[in-house]
Length: 120
Image 1 (cartoon, rainbow, N blue to C red):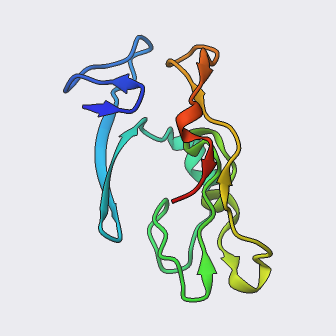
Image 2 (cartoon, rainbow, N blue to C red; image 1 turned 90 degrees about the horizontal axis):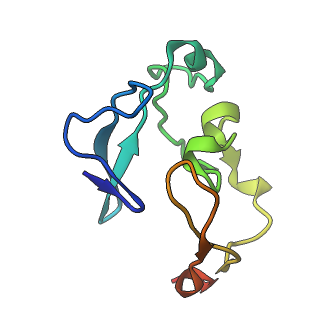
Image 3 (cartoon, one colour; image 1 turned 90 degrees about the vertical axis):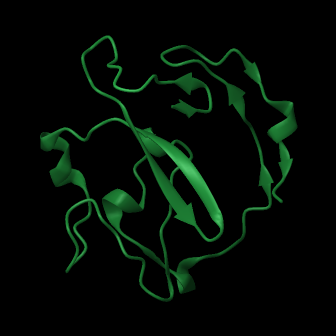
């Protein structure tokens, strides 16, 4: 399986013994492949618990937005504090300011100039 900058052969574990898995997520007409690190049981309590939904599962209500941080695996976002009402939105993202080349566990090694600029 691949996920951008990191390849994971099927059933491989990382050095620290955590088994990585891949899942697919479809948003509209686009399907994304997502590399997953299993959630430690002690971290589940940090997630926002949506009434009527299993833990770590969210259904975005009409008129609300799910806000994803700029670093999906290391951001406090709607998974932790819930949804944002449309009335609270004050602008629209129109550009990507910065995008770095990065290897797993390393400092950024360069800037991805092709990704900076307008959002299509």
